[in-house]
Length: 114
Image (cartoon, rainbow, N blue to C red):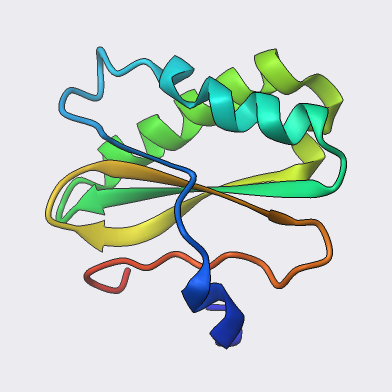
């Protein structure tokens, strides 16, 4: 777990989405985040996948879908996007954050630690 960064508590999600069915969920719903990071070199992006307790495999599948979609949309600019499993919540969900490239990194805010 990274060191606590108080500034990260003030970041607001850019996008949030629930993942009801992992198999049919389309990561294309996050294209706005991918495009914003790709076209604005002053930004870096963070995508956190939160899992329902006990659904670790689902979380990994969603994380892989997001990473694959980001590579397709962003190409080499994916080096400014971090896709990570953020811990547990009461349902499978995804949050994205856009922050200045020199700002402290965003941190996942799960309801339950991983």
